[in-house]
Length: 437
Image (cartoon, rainbow, N blue to C red; front, side):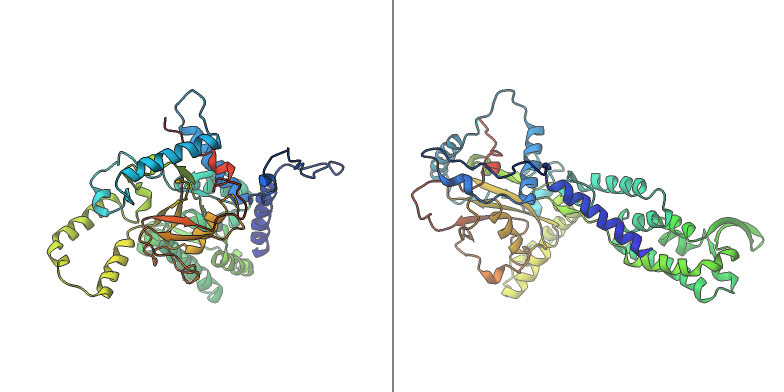
């Protein structure tokens, strides 16, 4: 049974890898890239090919942008026009308040309105490499994963029930409690096969109703290993039971292997999509709020939290040690699940991406590296306050570095050896610049 599970996941991973490989070629077809440079043309054509993940992120962001466009006329996204626009906005920005952080990320600002008028990002999106290449909200993936399991495993009810339990119930503590109870049912039968009481499960039993019945796939799992529904007399009344028949006791080896698979089954993982955006200074300067998906708490819970903090306003005026203040800051950051990072380049374009609060700073560095035109040139990221992140920070989480829920970082690197001027971002990302004229 475990071999079936392994083969299933290996096949799906191979399918996705094949899809990402791109179009095929005939054996006799010349696949050598034609990089014939014209006279006076720069060496841009020799740059490193973007990774599959970078291409996919750019394509997903471009697709979302295309869906949101409302203008009917052509959009000028030439590199010269973008650079000129950014330069003008940079000059205008200097005349305004300098180094102004326009993210609205405090709990107070977030809970004052049920639906913020202007969001910093249009939601939180995910990819699911096991199933396909789409970029969807988490809720849509939950539906799609359940449909996928039911379709792929329609001829194997045991594997279908295992995958449903592991992937289609989103309270992991409840799932673990259910699995523990299912294992107990099975092991009681294996260890006490001659005792009839261990082969009956009363459906209105409180523990069963609370820990098994609500979990998708749990009843199906019990039925797939041999349990059948029966109406039996219990304390002079008829009640519904799940009963493990005596003639199924010869298949206890299958029951044991199925239980092992349930405990060790691999889950279908979602991968957070960066939801890449490239902003002009005028767009980045607008007052914005985070969407509800960024919060670990509901809107109602956030309001209650804010009310508690307002009631303790006087306490905040008390002198506190650095350690006390750090603890309070960490408690505030625990209200968030995701983090929005903006990276400002010397040409004033801003790259924006979404991260989990427990991702490491090395993930931000990798995100930036895959986005820049010249991936080989070293660069550094620093805060507006002047702190430059070092190698020691790479293994720290964004929460530990106090970058949650939003942060603006400055991109710095040494000038190129030659005098040729290139945009900092790759062409496919430059095409995402949204012209607001």
